[in-house]
View 1 (cartoon, rainbow, N blue to C red):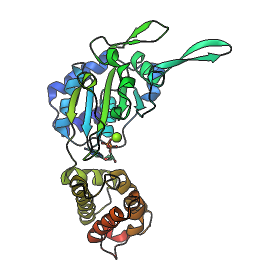
View 2 (view 1 turned 135 degrees about the horizontal axis):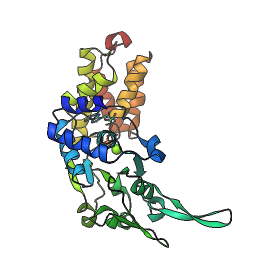
View 3 (view 1 turned 90 degrees about the vertical axis):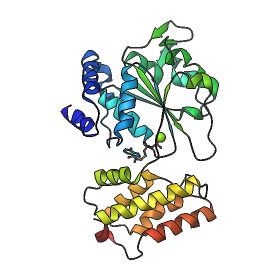
Length: 305
Ligand SMILES: Nc1ncnc2c1ncn2[C@@H]1O[C@H](COP(=O)(O)OP(=O)(O)O)[C@@H](O)[C@H]1O
Ligand SMILES: [Mg+2]
């Protein structure tokens, strides 16, 4: 627990906010049946200002919409928020077939009886969870419309054929939305109006350095700079629409470095983690060029760690 506060303090989160956070946590202990949903994030979210804004809004009872391009840490932030508030986490991925029953629940037959099978939004609501509505803009707008009453001041769920239920006081929803450099599916106004919106900043060299250091403490400074530079090159090319966002894959880069750590040649690892993510010959060539420019051909494991 102390560690969480230290982490937040070191990122410049004000004392007052930390105090309010503590009060919140004392007020809402985690229910036993949801304790297995308390999940420690694999990496802290780096970015004090964004953390501060998010924590303040959630303490006020608001729901959050995190909008930003790929790899701006939207999911990492959402997971960190659930952890610092010590709330059970419910993750719901939105897609074109998302409907009311996959969110709220549906009737099923169990031993010749009709029973309501609770969906993740329902469980999140009753257990005081933090629900991540992941890539909410990928669903059809009428699917998300069933959440209108859940997300606004009414804080309730109308379960068809059953009573309405009210949200636990500690329940919050954090939606994410990939607001790409090209081809974004818009979210309608009625839905957006139910959130406080955070525009997630693009990743910077400094933050990249911290992510790399946190993930690979043994990596040397030179290699950290090289990999940051590589990612920023790709980010710029994606921004300028020279490439799609497919090869702009930070998770892929981290996975590639992990492979280098176990002895795979950098070029091969980066092919799997980044270059091969584009399935367009021209794009692939551009990405390969960026990689070859940044990564010395004779590099081995020993040059990195
Ligand atoms: N500010 C940040 N702090 C920590 N990790 C970050 C940050 N920004 C990006 N990342 C890293 O980027 C990768 C993708 O993060 P994720 O949250 O899945 O991005 P998004 O949901 O915005 O596409 C993860 O490996 C994560 O560690
Ligand atoms: Mg995401």
